[in-house]
Length: 391
Ligand code: IPM
Ligand code: MG
Image (cartoon, rainbow, N blue to C red):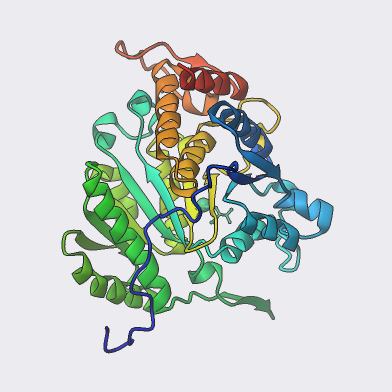
C-alpha cells in the first residue's frame, strides 16, 4: 500500500489474458470495422486471410466518416454494443479529406476510434516494431543503425490531452491534459509486465524506458513518480526515464537500445509513427488496444491513406500483422498468430513489395544478397501470404 495515495488503485492488472477463450462449440466472433479510405481494402484482404485460417463469424459495421455520412455520427450506440459483444474487433482506418474541418462542432471520423477506445476501456495500446531483415534497406535509416531493433511501444490510450476538457471561445482555445494515479499505474504495470514477458520469451528484453516531459509538465511528474513507485514490484526489470524530445532523437540515432517504451497518449501517438518508419514503411506497423474485460481492438497504424484509395496498391501487411495480434492477444490462438507472422516474413523474403515498401534510393545499386523486388498490389500480396500459410 502506498501512503500518499492509499491502495485505491488496482494491485493486479492482467497482462494480456484474452477476455474470452472461445468455447470449442462456437466460432470466434469478430466485429470488423472497415471504415474509410483504404480501410475497406485492407479489411477485405484480412477477411480472405481469416477464411484461409479457419472459421470465424465476421460481421461488418460502419465507423468513422462512412458512419457520419449514414448516421451523422462517427460511432453509433448499436455499433459500440456490437463491438462490446464480439470476441475481438478488427478495424481498418478512419478519416479522410472529405470530413476534414476546423469547425469545433463538425462530427469527425476520429471520434469513432476515440469513442471505441473509451467505450471499450482500451487503455493499453501495444505497437511492436521489429524491422524485417528483408526490408532493412527500405528503412530511411542506415542498416547498421536499425540492426537489432526490436521494441514495443506501450501507449496509454484513454487519458491525457486526448480526453481532457477542450474548448474555444473569444479567439482562444484550450486542450487539457489530465492523468490520475490509477490511469498511470495500470498502464505502467502493462509496460513492466510486457518487458518481463519479453525477457522470459527469449526476446531481448527486461527494460522499460518511461518517456515523459517531467522537466515541464505536472502530469509528467506524476507519471514519473508513479512509475518509479511501481519499480520495486518489478525488481527484475530495468527502468529508465527519458524526456520525450530526447526519446525522439534516440529513436533515430540508436533504436536498438530500446525494449519497452512506456508513455502517455499523445507522446505515444507521435513516437509510434516515428518508430514505425524504422521498418521502412508505416504500412508495416500493427497495433493492439487492450482493456480489462472487454474485447480488444486490432488495427494497422497507417490510417486511411486517401491518396491511394482505389488503386489496388494498399499494403495489407500491417493489417495481417494486426490479425496476428488479434489471434494472440484477443482470441488465444498463439499458434495461428505465429503462422501469420511467418507467412508475412516469407513473402517479404521472396521479394514481394507493395509500392510503399519498394522505395530504393535513386542511383543506389541493388544489393547482391537480396532477391529481386517484385512490385505487387493488395490482391497479389494477399494471395502470396495465403499461399505461404497453406504450405
Ligand atoms: C493513431 C491515430 C489516432 C490517434 C487518430 C486517428 C485519432 O493517429 O491511432 O495513432 O491519434 O490516436
Ligand atoms: Mg497516430
